[in-house]
Length: 357
Image (cartoon, rainbow, N blue to C red):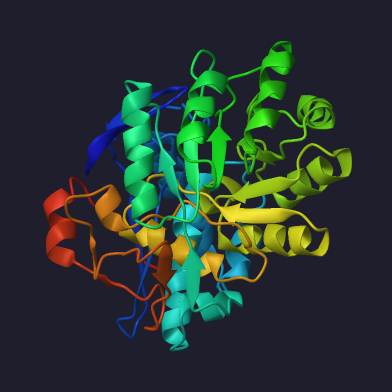
């Protein structure tokens, strides 16, 4: 699927998104859907679209073919012998969760234990060609009512840029996302962000680090949010105990699925750590999973789940995900709550694999 606009971060620019839709069908014709979030290139993590296919086809699906599943939590337990490859695991587990909710005639949100009827959402803005363009873009989204603005930064496009945005929008909740673009050598520059009253700075240091982030957090007033460093509940526990962050971004694909995402949410809720749901430029199915997860009570900061029209000319679900004054109203139909637009899905489909159980 081609995104409406190129999306640029510190590690590259993307506009064409290839991914897998996973579908789990039972003997009564119920259909559950998941979505893979790995990118074509290993920018964000070591996983790619091709490695997802390899892992699902050659390892993960055979495991599911061998063992009965009583509850979706069983999937993450069955996948434990396979190291990492969380995005491949999540793509399959998501379809099982959706199918389970539909079999029980409940929403995915309720199946997860969520209670919210609406969720607050923010918007993520990639690196722009000019500060003027960035300010105009921020203004458009503030006018649309988004509850928080996330701005991508990198060395040379950071403090001065954010200062100009803050001058134009003194009261808007703003956060910065560095996507691991800095080191502790940039400490003094990063400390200047404390002047700007930011909600947080997301993943300023290495993608696999929690030690240096603890050092940085001690030196900064701005809360650090960890993203790429958190792949599991165990990573979460270590980061919190070390003082590496005050906020955690929970991405379903990054942590291996909804079951682990819920466990991380529960731990953070019990330990006073703020959480929010991050996005991976998902199409409608992945977006619907994010909406359901965010209905859990501990998600107390606006997430990245913007409306479908922000990214796609035409999404693969109906109705599309819409945002009204910074809110998404949680659908009430069973499962993910949205229907799959099979005609649109087939327009974009380039290949299909079928596995019998």
